[in-house]
Structure formats: structure tokens, C-alpha cells
Image 1 (cartoon, rainbow, N blue to C red):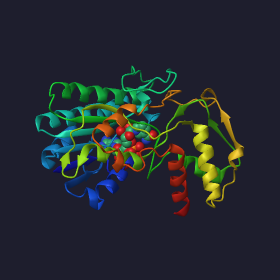
Image 2 (image 1 turned 30 degrees about the vertical axis):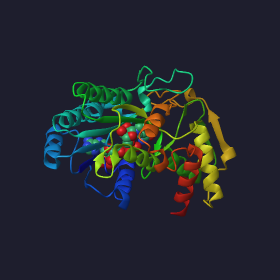
Image 3 (image 1 turned 135 degrees about the vertical axis):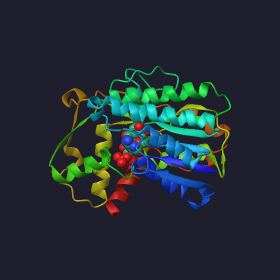
Image 4 (image 1 turned 180 degrees about the vertical axis):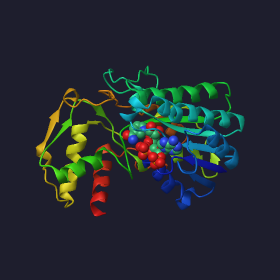
Length: 312
Ligand SMILES: NC(=O)c1ccc[n+]([C@@H]2O[C@H](COP(=O)([O-])OP(=O)(O)OC[C@H]3O[C@@H](n4cnc5c(N)ncnc54)[C@H](OP(=O)(O)O)[C@@H]3O)[C@@H](O)[C@H]2O)c1
């Protein structure tokens, strides 16, 4: 089977490469594509790449993810996050190819009490979220006319891996500054890119076949929830315990409301994702036993990540 992965140089793209290159996953012809091989803002290049690789499975981990910059570059954000996925979807239904796409908690407005399910109404607050919602809508619409074709959209949240992310920023600042203020009234679930890649690849792949998963949108995040403040404190604490030299103790991080830290793009106050639908599908497909970290809480995963960073 030909598998074509877009976004190879991103946090998730890097984790997908690691996952797919493991011996247990190597039953397929793999192509990893980054911006230099295919600029998703160039739709002719995208069409050419799809026709050249003739994939049986497209995995789209590429995205315009600069949440604040998107406010002043809406056309580019929509081109990469909505138009490019719609071209991938059209290619997929016309060529008996499956599609795995990733989306975001930022398609919600955050006004719900409790966790968001896949059936909750979306209402993105900023351009990034709107462009990702448009990408979701395009894929769902294209596949709705082809009931036998398979697609999955994994909505995830607060991703960290190899690349720039909130945890790395906090650890850098903790080395540079004696104190820090972090938002404590926005809630979500930090998601390790390697965890997500492991779950997603087991979900779509059964050796050299696409698994018979039910098409649709799935929420994918680890167990638990926290605020940015909670995440920052844990990261600083583990870094300290792992021997990193910080200027700042976790107790010197001050919790503040989001209203005291205005950013160009508004963020949802609550973006906690319920993973019940994904859990049920993993059970139906009998994959849960293949995922030893499926139930590992976000905090254990962050601690392991920070320890690993400390050893580098
Ligand atoms: N990061 C998060 O907190 C978060 C939260 C929720 C959902 N998600 C979703 O999860 C998925 C993976 O995110 P991530 O954290 O891995 O993002 P990331 O680290 O920012 O990676 C995105 C990748 O997309 C590539 N890309 C951007 N514009 C492109 C273009 N014009 N042509 C080709 N490639 C382009 C980037 O290429 P370059 O390396 O060349 O820049 C980068 O490698 C995305 O769908 C994102 O929306 C992320």
C-alpha cells in the first residue's frame, strides 16, 4: 500500500515518521512530504504530488498553525487548512484512497461546561479555527457523496513534540526569568505528538491494509485536563527535579486570567475533548490492547517528555 504523509517536518509529522518507520509498521511504501517537496499553498503542486505518488492512504499532518498570525493572513490560512484538504479529499474519493486528517479544539468557542463531544456545535473564535473548520466541512461534504470511501478527522488539542510548543517556551523562560505569569482560566488537554501518532496509526492501519474503521470525526487526547498554568507548573517542577538549572521555582509562576494576557486571536476558555467516541471505535476494532499508553494521563506523558528534554 502507498502511504503519503504531508507535514513531515511538523511536531505530529515527525512523530508519524517515527511511528511508521518502526519495524512493526513497515509493510508499506511510505512517502513523507514537507513544504520543500510540496507547498500546500500551491494547488497545482499538490495535485501533481497526489498524481505522482498515487497513494492508497493520505495522512495530512500539515497545517497553517500560527494561531495569531492567521488573523492577518486569512487567505493563506484558508488555502492550507481548507482548500488543500478539500483537494486531498476529492483525490481520495476519486481514486479509492483513504484520508486521515487532523483538526483542532479551536473549532469550539469554549462556552460549554464539561467536555466537548463530536456532536457539539462548532463556533470557532479566530481565523485559524475557522480555517480548520472549513477544512473539516470540505472533507465531510466530499466523502458524504461516496459512502464506501473511508476518512477520519482526528481533532486534538495542545500538541507538543519535536518542535516549538508551549512546554518548551515555558522551560526557556524559566531559565531566563525569575518569575512568570501564566493563564489559569483556559482549560484543555495537552497531547503528546508521539501518543497521537501511535493511536492514529493503529486506528487507520492494519499492517498493509486500511483498517475498516467507521468514517467520521474523532476527538483524540489523553486522559485528564488542566490549565496552561497547571501545565507550566508541572513542566517546571519536572525540569527542576531532572536537574535543569532554572531561575524560577514553580511557586514563582503566578496564575492570571486570560483577560490579563490579550493576544491577537481569541482562544476558547474550555477546549476539553471527550474521547468516548474514539474509545468505542478502538474497542470495536479490538485495538485498545495494542495501545499501552491509551489511558496514560496527560500529566505522566508531560513528565516523561520533560525528563527526556532534560537528558538532551
Ligand atoms: N500544535 C497544536 O497545539 C495543535 C493543537 C490542536 C490541533 N493541532 C493540529 O494538529 C496537526 C499537526 O499540528 P503540529 O503541532 O504538528 O503543527 P506544526 O508543528 O506547526 O507542523 C505543521 C507543519 O505544516 C507544514 N506547513 C505549513 N504550511 C505549509 C505549506 N504551505 N505547505 C506545506 N507544508 C506546510 C509546516 O511546514 P514547515 O515545517 O516548513 O513550517 C509544518 O511542518 C495540525 O492539523 C494542527 O492543526 C495542533
